[in-house]
Image 1 (cartoon, helix red, strand yellow):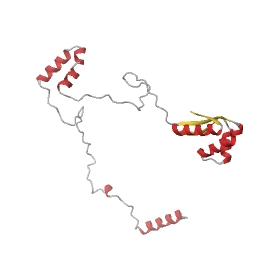
Image 2 (cartoon, rainbow, N blue to C red):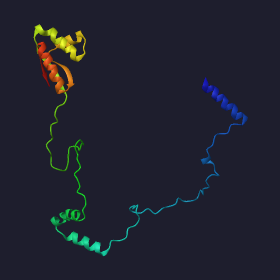
Image 3 (cartoon, helix red, strand yellow):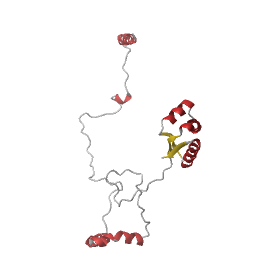
Image 4 (spheres, rainbow, N blue to C red):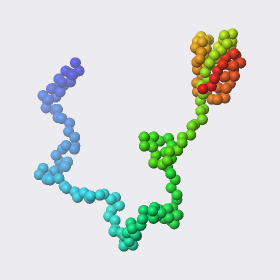
Length: 190
């Protein structure tokens, strides 16, 4: 219904000849004069772009030095950089650490270093077994540190062996194990 109303409105405007399409100033012919027969301008593009401009040719002293370096043996050329850095008091370059970076299957270029195993900081407490006579005490202890209801704690204890708590510190895990042992159960830390 809206489309038909809009189309009627447009037809009425065209009959009145008051409807002029909107035009952008950029498309007006008087904004930019252009010769239709003109060819595009060709610019000379250098083979390699140097943002600092053309460089002067090297001096004769530099050319002689380069020739002397090229004439040295492979071993002697290897001693140039350490000697120059020592003589010019350049700072020693530290190797970049790639620890934590994924270098793909190729790994680093240097020798392989044995990975240190990080100490485990988060532990899981697992209930292994319990005495049938001490079942109620174990359920009470499980409720105390897991904040579960009576039914959930009972179901958890009956599914032995089961993980009671995950991601706890070593001290907290030891206290939980001691409380369960005092109640008549056997728990281990994983």
